[in-house]
Length: 394
Image (cartoon, rainbow, N blue to C red; front, side, top):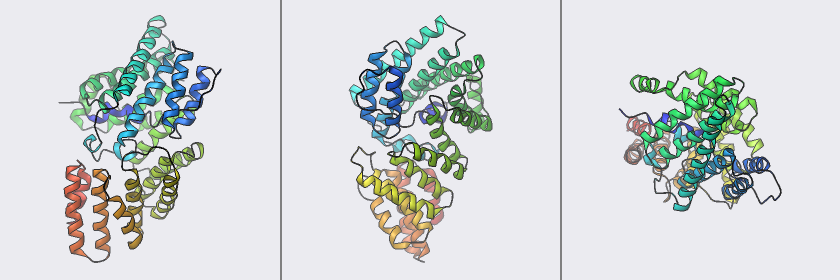
């Protein structure tokens, strides 16, 4: 039996959207990383990498600099694939819906070089100071990043599982050595939560492999990390957006997203997630307002977009407008969502919303036609939840 994909790729939600800033000569590596973080969460990926390379050059023996650069590269690859939204981690559809083409060779090579250096330097720190919580934290975080890349980019699930287990062990040891290290709770808490959601046989296998469980405890640990205000506070906030959505705590997710929006106003994807969470929470009017603002922001933003992003925005708003029974507006959005370039799952779910719209109008024949198309497209896109919904409509 293979480990469940959620265990292997859990660290993927920990580093959502890293990037950096313009040249800043004379700054320390810490200052460069701090500035990079602000640009990172505002989606300035290329600037992030450039600044983090400066941090590596300034302080080459600090594993944190190499880890931060590797994180930025990995997240840039995921951004190019479009695998950076909550939808990709809610458990509905598989990674087959994401473009799994090989990453640019130069980025792949640089990532592997930087993460290997981060692990090597952290291992030296652990060997020199085996009772240092900081050393174990650095090693666990670097290995966790390697696990995420191995599973999400290379598709090597067993190799990713082994690295994930080591990451969990090292960060848990950091907490044992210093319980006040709330930042270490992000990885441990995330893994604990995800293990608790697995089927019983897979969960037992995860326990045997060394993972702990406990859904409420896991969420509490991530919440504590977010409140602690340390290095990975923002990472923990993005993780909570995912966990709250999984738990149907949509109002809590929207509160976190409101804080993130204030702190990172150039990150248009925060608006996308806020609108999506509002729709899931049956607040379509709020969702429509948020997504309309986001679409306007998207149109004016000259920076790179994720594949099929325009269609994704319109699918999200179209779904909200279907709930509001605004037929013409909803149809206009959903027609855009089904244009060439849309991700398969977006195309399928847009057809599903068209079926719902047809039912609202009493058009049963049209509803069956769109539901049949949704079932077909969603089936090819490995989206079983969409397939089930389409069959109900049919």
